[in-house]
Image 1 (tube, rainbow, N blue to C red):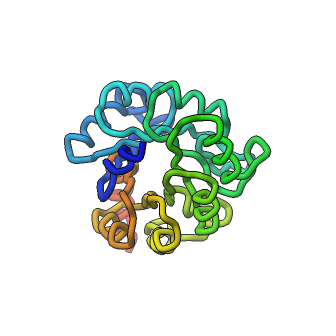
Image 2 (spheres, rainbow, N blue to C red):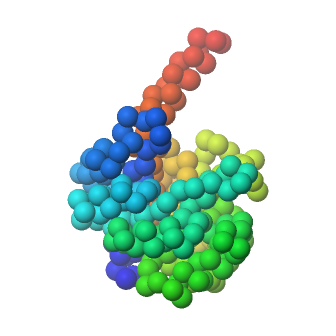
Amino acid sequence: MNKILERLKNKLIVSCQSEEGDPFNSPEYVTLFAKAAIMGGATGIRSEGFFKTKMIVENVDVPVIGLIKSHYEDGFVRITGSFADVEKLIETKCHIIAVDGTFRLREGVTGPNFIKEIKKRYNVLVMADISTYEEGIACAKSGADCISTTLSGYTPETKHLSKDKPDIKLVSDLTKNISIPVIAEGKLNKPEYAAEALKAGAWACVVGTAITRPRIITQWYIDAINNVKEN
């Protein structure tokens, strides 16, 4: 299964997700985003939800990272937080399952212990989505096949971090201290940020919003224009 990770080395993974209210929020439309990303050179796709992930897997020939989003009681996002979620993603035949690797409890256990149990129960590749260095180290020790910095800035412990720039230091610190691939994800909103992440040791980069969320990209421009008008 490591051949799947080898295919992603030094490459771009595009996260093709859409939220409720977006006009692209359907399996058919996110699959078209995935196809367009691959035409542009992406060698991997990240997808959320059972039906969307299943359709993408059935229509592309690159590795697909699947996940199911939910929320903790405090409202912060949780990535594939139950064994039921894992089993649904296995049904999609996605190549890698992204799992919340934070220290927050789900089904009575922390992320690292949850991953350890997943690796015991199922023959799957696990990507641990983490927010801190300590979480990354713990998930690597628990059997995760790769680490992603997805949740840096999106947990109670890291919400103080920049909302505009990726956590390159986290990428660098992890790559120096663990042997499994570290994938840079989160706020890679400029091509130069992706290049910076690879220089810091990232195995690959995941980019989502800046490629597949036209509503939000449009808002970036509107905010910049309004800022000029106000000043």
